[in-house]
Amino acid sequence: MRRLVLVVFLCCIVHPVHAQQAGKLHIEALQVSDIEVYNRSYEGFQEELARSGIVEGKNLVIRRHIIDAKADPNLWQKVNILIRIKGKASDIVDAKPDLVLTIGTPATKYSMDKFVAAGIPVVFTAVANPLVLGCPSLERPLPGITGATLYLDPLALLKLSQMALPTMKSMGMIYSDDDNAVAFVEEARKKAETLGITIVPRQVKKSDPIRPAAAELVKQGVDCFGVPLDAYYGLRNTQPGRDILAYAMEANKPLFAYANFPLPGATLYIGPDFTTVGALAGKQAVRIILNKVKPGTLPILRQQELIVLTDPQAVQRHGLKFSPALQQLVKPAKFEK
Image (cartoon, rainbow, N blue to C red; front, top):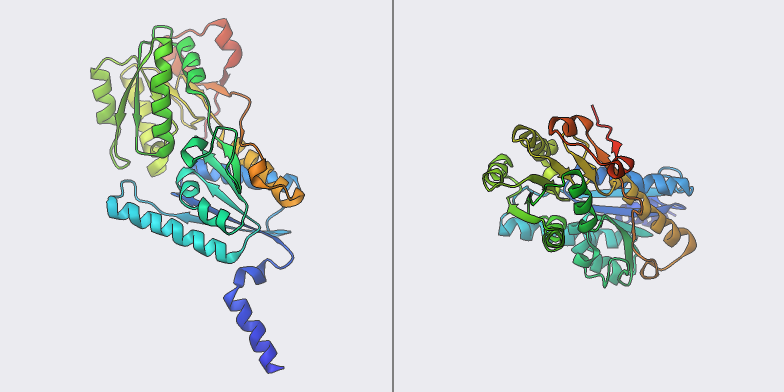
């Protein structure tokens, strides 16, 4: 009898998650960097699960792993981050969850193969472009993995921006080496040409202040600024985002934020809502968990309704007047206090 008790005790030590999740669903979540927009995606995911009766603490155990990453890692630090992603992925595989949620491109790109090889369903969210993951298209997933993308066609975003600023000929765009940002800027540069707009890019390190790059673009004569989807703007409590908005006002240059950024000062905010995209990932997870659908058969989801917001005070300061067509599309943004 004592031997049996000892065996059970040792099993609980070796497999604490298995013991903890007895009779419950088990999800592991993985992300790189702790930024506010990722929190929104995670919350949207949890809320969607709850709508289907899958509630943490009731019938669900969910563990979230956040890998800290320096703003500007050198080569060896990047290697270390990659090793940590792989190591954490191995730990997650050993925990044998029912599903893995990956938040953001880096976490998804560098961990998904381990999960798929282990036969664990993977759902991603907050990935701007599935092609970066190797997906055959924006809608078609890879075997063993599906999710919800932030992708919005830059051409549509630029057309709306041009409606707000018809005189626009050039747009300054400051971005980092963030995978999402690089993909967006490259696509925007190509598509802007069809509208007679030149995108003037400036790449910065994630630890760099943004004002010097913004001042350089103003000297080059850009008509406005565009803020791509880029983790850089959310770092240091959104300091780069606050600084570019403040500088745009000082320089009297309209700014277009291609995400629903929670800070005042932009002429237009056109982009995906991270909570909504997180909820779409939750829908995928529900189908996989409850209906036993294979991830590779579920098309990648994305937000269908284009949300266009504006800061009326910024519009007034820049002396802009929206056309009736644009006025019908935009709504005043609500900012966090």
